[in-house]
Image (tube, rainbow, N blue to C red; front, top):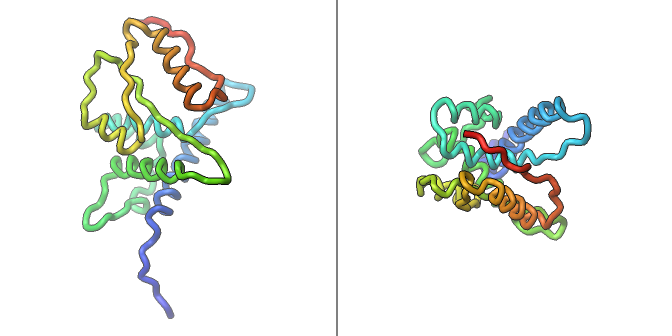
Length: 184
């Protein structure tokens, strides 16, 4: 009998765990989108997941738990927990580390395909974001903050966001944000 004491490939564990959770999230979201749309449905579960992940960075308590549930990370936490050295990584931080590793791996150049994932925070320019939050968004999601004027120039901001999306996707994304409706 031969026993192997070789450590499991952490990258593969991370990719498998994130992939499984993202697949569950994608199918659940597709079911919801299909309820209100009889035609084709086009969306990016990875794009939506990373956006929710950036939101999760700024949450705590019940809100963080609800977002983790959306990610399908609340299931089977014992088997998905990873030990690094002597310290266990908390569930929420682990999610962000998974995304960091995923975005790094998927962004590596390949001769077989071209795949670009890009993220950006568009935040109200009068809101004071915590620097620690912005640092984590950069670290884990490779994104930065673009201050915009949602309060006084919502339509111009919408156009700016749509232009950014077109630029990042080399214009194949035709779905854009609709004109803004002012609410109080």
